[in-house]
Amino acid sequence: MLNKGLGGIFKQAQEMQSKMAEVQNELGQKKVEVSVGGGMVNVTANGLNEILAIKIDDELINMQDREVLEDLIIGAVNEANRKVKELSQAEMSKLTGGIKIPGLFG
Image 1: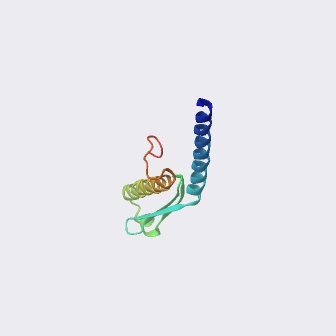
Image 2: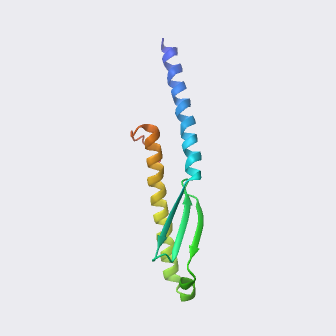
């Protein structure tokens, strides 16, 4: 009887692992877009937190103010990271039925 119970647990674990791989694949296809500085810096990232594009307005580049540019890029990337984390948590919540599993998309 113990073996039958363990077999069921392993099957459930394999199913969960397969579903998690599907979610990861789906997250890789989703995008978040962030705009800061009144649209002067735009960052696009996928759901795996990979930066896909950074666009900088010509006006900002022409200002030749490195510190402002650097601050806006940092802000945009950090905001993109935050949005990706929210997206990941929402997708994983669908998989786990809202149960928070420690260490899973943190």
